[in-house]
Length: 110
Length: 113
Image 1: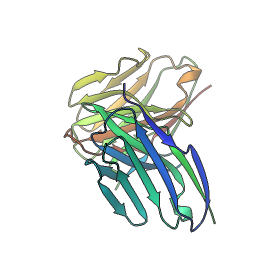
Image 2: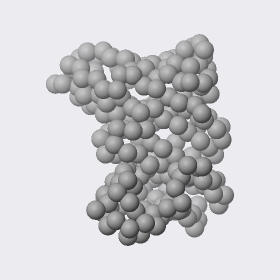
Image 3: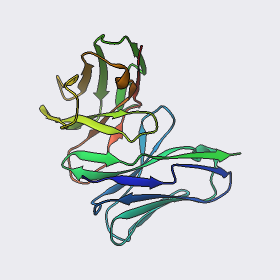
Image 4: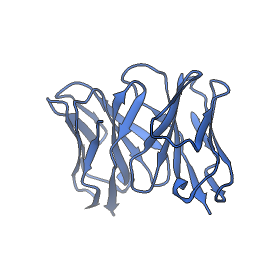
C-alpha cells in the first residue's frame, strides 16, 4: 500500500525565516495535495500538484512536485506566526481514497 | 459560510455507550468521507459514500457504522466506544471527480471516559 512520509516531524522557526517541508511517497503520485490544519481543527486545502516538475505558489507558500512524481516540497518564505499549524501532504491511493502523511508541526516564534 | 459542518465540536461519552457524530454539507457533493485522526497521526479513512453507495475500508472496525439518509447529511455511529476510539473525527466531501481536493469540516473531538 502507498505511504507518505513527511519530514521534519516538527519545526520551530523564528519569524521571518524561510523553511521547507518534504513529502516522500512510496509510489508514483497522481495528484499530490497540501493541507494545513490548525491545532484541533479540520484541514484547509492549500495546493494541488499533478505534473512532474510542477510548481505552484500562493502568497508566501510554494509547493513543488519532482520530475519523478515521488517527492514534493512545501516552502514558506519569510514565515509569520499565522503560518503556524500542522502541514499535511495527501495523495490518491485509489478511487475516492486519499491517504495523508503524518504531518509537520510548525511553530513560528514572534 | 461553513460548507461542511460537524456537530458537536466536542463530544464526551462513556465507555461502551453508543455515540453518533453528524456531518452536513451545503456543497451538494456526491462523496462524503469519515476520517479518524489520533494525536500526532495521519488522518485514517474509515469509510466513504458515493451518493448512497457505502464503501467500508477493510480495516475499519465493525464497531463503526455510518448512515447517509440524504445528500446533505452523513452520520458516524460508534456502537460501543472503547478508550482507543478517542480521537478527532473528520468529515470531508468531494464532487466525485478525478484529482480534486477534499473539503473538510472542523472535526469532532471525541473523548471516552
